[in-house]
Amino acid sequence: MKFTSAALPVLLLGLSSAVSTAAASFTPPATFKNANLVHVVSAEKNYIKETINVLVENIAKTPQDEYYLAIPTDKFDRVGGFEVKDRKDSAAGEFVAEAVEADPSSATQYFRIRLPKALDAGAQQTLGITYYVLSAYRPLPALISQDDKQYLVYDFSAYVPSAYETTKQKTEVKFPTSDVPDYTKLPNKELSQKQGSKITYGPFDTQPAGALLPVEVRFEFTKPVNHVQRLERDVEVSHWGGNVAFEERYALVNRGANLSTLFNRVKWAQSAYYNPASPALKEMRFPLRPGSADAYYTDVIGNVSTSRFRSGKREALLEIKPRYPVFGGWTFPFTIGWNADAGTFLRRLTQSGSYVLNVPFLEGPKQLEGVEYEQVRLQILLPEGAENVKFSAAIPSSSVETSEVSVHKTFLDTVGRTAVVIEARNLVDEFRDREVIVTYDYSLVASLRKPIVIFSSVLGLFVAAYLIGTVELKFSKK
Ligand SMILES: *[C@@H]1O[C@H](CO)[C@@H](O)[C@H](O)[C@H]1NC(C)=O
Ligand SMILES: *[C@@H]1O[C@H](CO)[C@@H](O)[C@H](O)[C@H]1NC(C)=O
Figure 1 (cartoon, rainbow, N blue to C red):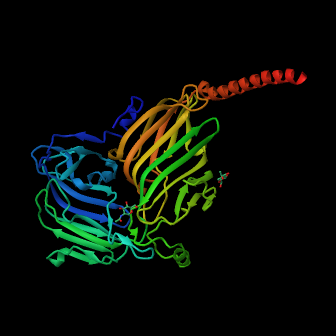
Figure 2 (figure 1 turned 90 degrees about the vertical axis):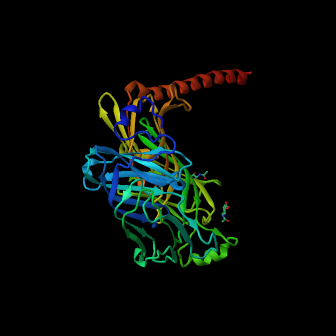
Figure 3 (figure 1 turned 90 degrees about the horizontal axis):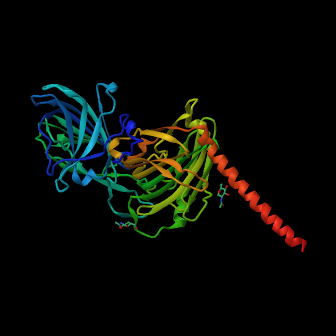
């Protein structure tokens, strides 16, 4: 991850380097033991959310401040939103965690978690670790007809992959419904039990570091598997217009089962009357900040009229429908945009002209089935002449790929506009509304620059028109 000097001070506020390199074939030192561990795998949304609550014990002779979490290499690139807290001490805040780039040919990779205070020899601490796995499922069957139920498969280890010995552990898997036709059953029936929409593996007794127990589950998910390959979100701040303009460009694909037969529009229209569960994406709902206005929605063809926008004092909601239902394997590229009053997001800190801007990092759709984001690029365009720019984003640092302050020139700009650009990957809709805070100085001279430029260019136009007018006058007199 790169930082410009302008962004450096904010580093202390939250962001830190995402990836560091370690020696090839790296194995964490055996300084800890997992005394008790509860692993929850939620398959309720169209991404996996993993929660690991673990009582860790320092079994070394000296204080330790680095704990490693193992992730299988085949999932590592699809893991994001990695966050760690102390389960017993919420005041300790978010722990710094970073991906350790070890030997790519190794079967296991690691996240390094820095404990804010070194743990004494023999002492224990309860860590609450959460992260998400994107592109987690494969549909089975891979092809279905348009009114079939959809089933998804997920593979994982019933022993949590660990760099340390684990004395006691269990894994709970949660599904959207109790329709789970297949799951790995262990020889000892007690250790794999299904209850409604939940399966519990374990409790298991002591397992050595690196122990794995591969299992597979297959469950009903007759909902779209919304995967945003890339979101480009532009936020343009105008002091002069008292406006903040938002535009979002989505490249979305449904990762669900492909159609086994050609799409039948008549059959679709008939079934629409009953509104059955469907693996196709039919509608998206974007809750926006109150007071949002001028919403638009376009796709590759142009303006789409099948959208509804309501904006009131307490809430605003944009509802959009694709032109056709988006089935598995189909893509849905679209753009939405809206305006908001600058007062909603912007505050002046000092008379001399220091400002603070607070905008959500993501504001994407809120869908019952969830939305995952492979790549997100947020660009915040500040007014021309903004200086001394600092920023901080409340998203996990290991999900940030690059962040920088750059200069962006557009029509009628004299010195160019300063932009804050943050590229992040592997996020999910649970990070909606995480804040990005930008502070900057913007002086009266800078605020007058644009009107002066506009005025002088308009003046130039008048002069030109006047000259042309005179010429024409001469001609017309002829
Ligand atoms: C697109 O729709 C918006 C609002 O629905 C309208 O104001 C605009 O004129 C339309 N643009 C075109 C090119 O049809
Ligand atoms: C599903 O459709 C996508 C896009 O057309 C294609 O790339 C993929 O191979 C298909 N999958 C199967 C299992 O047919």
